Length: 484
Image (cartoon, rainbow, N blue to C red):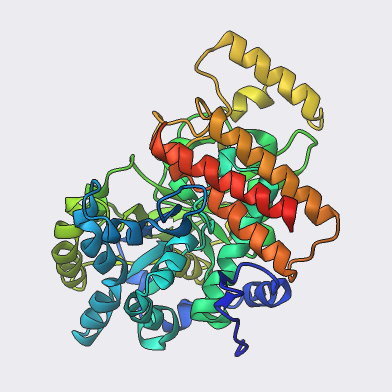
């Protein structure tokens, strides 16, 4: 794994062309955290895992005319335009993106065993490079490469362009997953990529349409991921469709499609809704301290409280998180409740003799109602008929996915963005079928524009400037595909 990938090619981030190298890096089944863990798993009462999500979109704002403006990072735009809302936070955001590169070495020097999981979108990493924030990347590199620090930090895979799975064409979702792996390996190395075993979906969005969820899980498994982080409210127990009963134990996400095919992957359950205060104030530690060991597969194991929040967004993350994180790592050092990362926890379970088939099975929300009336292998047409029947009977029934919140749809009301996105996606697929390969410069340029256009921000913030950004990026993607 000593091979190096170029971080940029023809002025664009490295998003494709080294599929074989990426697959080899992700293929190893050897434990990556267990040999360096240093945690006495047998003595723990409980454990906790915190993840920080970091993201900034790329936007067509590098100039006056939106149709010709350069595509730059939103953070750069904030710094160049102090008059826009929230721009005063830009320098703090930048510090937040690199500060774990300060905190982890500090705690290690103090003789502690800190833990954190990191989820960085590809658009953020590219935007940082583009604006010259090399110091941020340089602070992060030891966390992925240095054996002293890498045991403390777990990098989570995600979609390169922060695309949400329920409303991203399934073939493009796979492109996002592979593009992130390319880009991460190009920055931090193939060996570092080989340690990336968990996947963090953008916005915690899990498709609940059976055929879409099946492709979601199959993409993760095909791409070498071993587990996925899910929001507890986005899944249900397979047996009876009820909520998860023991969210602090690992589960298996089982995805069935209308043709009778099944795919599964281990899932760690993020509890409660989306509230950055939970992470900023290290709530998982305090919750975990009130728990005790549980039985799983006939083995007594410590439960794991898992939480994720924005790593930079809001006053609590900017101001309260640093002292609380440092203090908690000191407090936990003397406690039977220890910080652990997701893969580390799963590797300890395996060493203790717990098999994955002992993990309780879950499926996306509302699917039991489908399977109660859809025969196995009935096919896509019958599936759509069943969905229409259920919608007619219950207006609350939907196939728009589940995420960290139930009050935002990633589909409804966004036809003016989703239409152009699907059009660009179809044109890209057509050009690929026409013979464009992943090492072709035309493919790279078209892929970059396509992935940038599918960032969730163009829907999250509602109608207005952000949806116009999304439409413009879709237009550019099509323009590249039509003229290349």
